[in-house]
Length: 146
Image 1 (cartoon, rainbow, N blue to C red):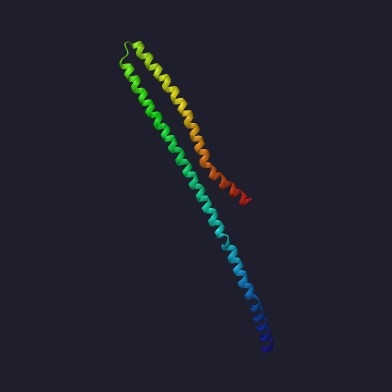
Image 2 (cartoon, rainbow, N blue to C red; image 1 turned 90 degrees about the vertical axis):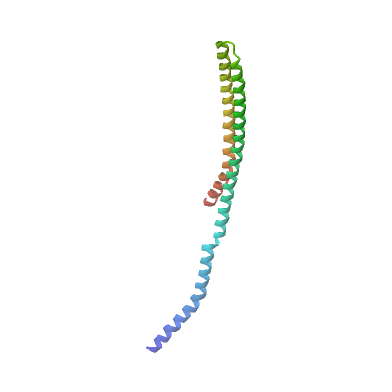
């Protein structure tokens, strides 16, 4: 029996000697495969974050411009209201007062509609600019997945 045990021990030692380099190499390769893509994932996340920052910046800039336009419109409307109020105080008859008020209402409505259309265009442009970096990142994601 001792002869058989020595043979099987020799076989085991030979197999261990052969499997150790393979096992270490397999482990190294597996580790590199598992964690080698981490740099790609980190870079991809960084690109997504930068796209989000660009989107936020475009939105902020667009809304600041829109805020300035709304403020200018409000200031102009207030000035016109003061002029109309002064004219209404100086009106000599009820008919003249009604005419002043109706002309003011008509011009104020037309001015508001004109500015509202302008603001809608500005909002649309802002949304388009803000969505552009996100759309490019989505395209990148689809290209990597496909």
